[in-house]
Amino acid sequence: MDKEPQAPDYYLAILSDMEAKRTALDTAIAGLRAAIAAGILGAFGEFPAGAVASNATVVPTGAADLPRGAFLGKTATEAIKLYLSTIRKKQTNKEIAQALRDGGLESAGDFGNYITSALFRLKKEGTVLRFDDGWGLSEWYNEAFRAKLGVSSSKKPTKRNKNKQKKPAKKETPRVALVLTAPQEVARAAASESGALDRRIEALLDSKSPVGIPIQDIAVEVGAPVGTVNFAIVRLAKRGFARRGDDGKVYSTSERQ
Image 1: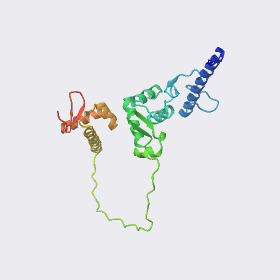
Image 2: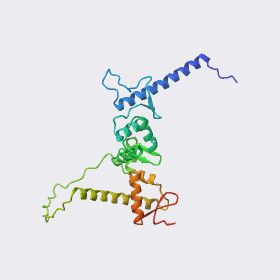
Image 3: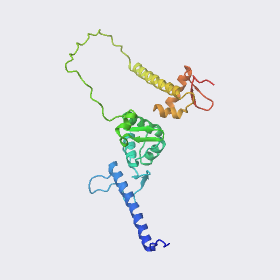
Image 4: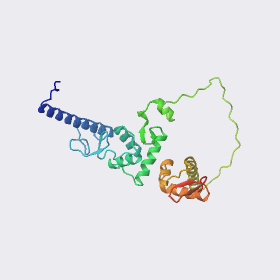
């Protein structure tokens, strides 16, 4: 049997060089596209600091590289959308927070809670979807898939009966308005917000029963800072709705041990 002819060494060297150049060119194209999306290139003819260049410092994202400082001056939601649209794959809370911090995003408070709150705001408005292995942009998935998750970009218009006559407005008995001082208004608002958070945590504990939940995971689920969740657990424990286990987790009182 005849052996397959081998390519000369200089052809292999040429092929290797061409593949290396192609990889470098793909990386440069991805970086330039990310810089354009970040809006940091300025007007035509300018070369602002931080723009993509052959020797520019970049933030590694896996699929493409973002220039260092790409998230400066952006809000958390803007930075998250830019980052996910660039990397184009699902990312966990920790991965997103680390990439945004490396890219120049800043926060005056706890950075992890800052990113978590922004993710839940984007989830509420339907911009991102949450999965067991991370977060992804909803635009990556078709309408049928988003509909299964309860997220849809199209809403059916409400049908109105043109022939239906409007009923006359009912006369309401005047009510005496309760005038509250500023401190009373603040106290009432705080109590209402705390009560809503307590109910959400109680429902979460019941849904996960009999498995306990670490406080950090509860904070992620309800989209609230860890300190605020701690106070809520204390309130629930005093009312007999929750308890802390010896393992540091929080349990529903329906599963006493």
